[in-house]
Image (cartoon, rainbow, N blue to C red; front, side, top):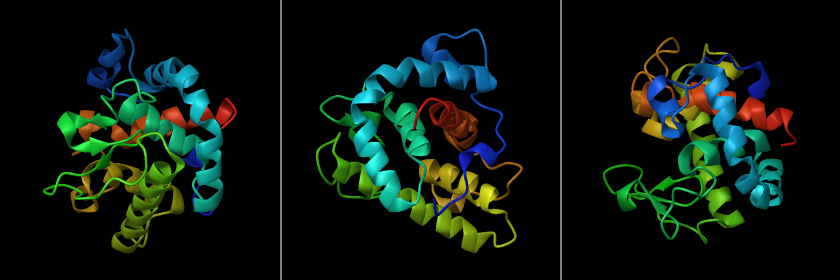
Amino acid sequence: MGYASVMHVETTGASWPTSQQDHLGCTGVEASNTMAQTDSGRMAKYKSKIQSVGGRSGIEPALIAAIISRESRAGNQLKNGWGDNGNAWGLMQVDVNPNGGGHSPRGAWDSEEHLTQATKILTDFIDLIGKKFPSWSSEQRLKGGIAAYNMGDGNVHSYLEVDANTTGKDYSNDVVARAKWYKRNGY
């Protein structure tokens, strides 16, 4: 893969607010693992598309699956492909809000074209974080890029507080923990 492996990225997992989406009695990696496992049945129908996009982009399929799990619960939280009150599109929730990402949706909400677009947005953020923080390791850049995928690179100010401005204040930590679960489970 062209980017760091999620298996080498440190993570604290999901915060309490994130874990409460599923009314869990735990937080951290345990909560992230539980949510990833909950989504795994729905995720299975996208596995070949995820693997294809991952192979072409240099991003581990497990990371793509983890973002799908976090963003749309493998499509379970979408209405006709839309989420975030109509501001985001598809499994990976591409931001279409003109005051946010301002992207135009590509492909059907569950298509390989959509996954390709969203994964390109992710790799662009990883690259931007690498330029912004050239002394960061490849693992830190990956985690920073994941955080930027949620809130933009302008909101990533330091590695120690990489999730300070993300949804649930845990986005990259939760996604990395879910990605590790998907990696261990065939992605």
